[in-house]
Image (cartoon, rainbow, N blue to C red; front, side, top):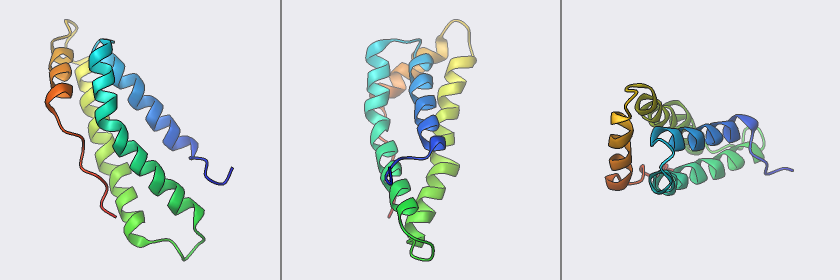
Amino acid sequence: MPNALPPSFTSLYRLFLRLSSASVLHYQPAKLNLIARYRPAFEEAAKLTVLVESTGPGKVDPIAVNALRTWHEQSAPEFLSVMFHALTCHPSGQYALVTVEFGTVSRSPPPLDV
């Protein structure tokens, strides 16, 4: 499969799905809202990953590589750390409620600049 995503990317997306659910204490509407808001960013990163991996050496667009690197090193870890923080900070679920509200009022992350 030439357009298959690398295991590291699919693993990151699965981690996002699990953390999205757990960070809002598995409250289904909030979980679906978070996924709907952040999935487009993952889809764009997946397209860039396939583009970068399918081109031959020396033919890779440096702008695409830079955008993908920024996404992997900054955007995705920042979002996952917010979700993890909401999950682990307070046993009463206080931060999870904030995350539920965050999911309802936040906008999607900005698209990758290519």
